[in-house]
Length: 78
Image (tube, rainbow, N blue to C red; front, side, top):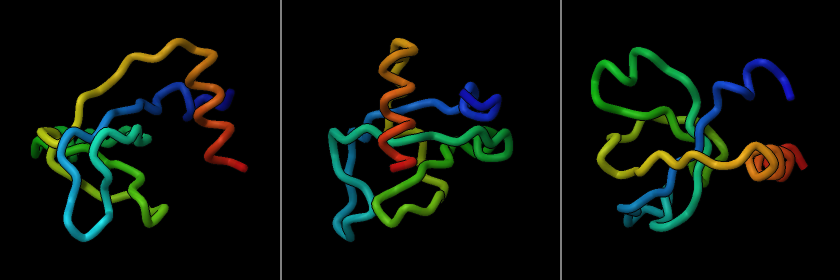
């Protein structure tokens, strides 16, 4: 696992969007971003495959076991 992957979190979207960039109840990668935290946002890789800022209130951060985190990260790289 790369050092940057240790900082990657995962979150479940609890409020999707009508335009389809986020799906409710889907797990998303959250990238570390201290400036996003300062404004109450998360930097999330959405359905477009790009990372954007979204309100923290749309997500619940989940703490996953290491083997599950590795499998999720591997599925993104494929």
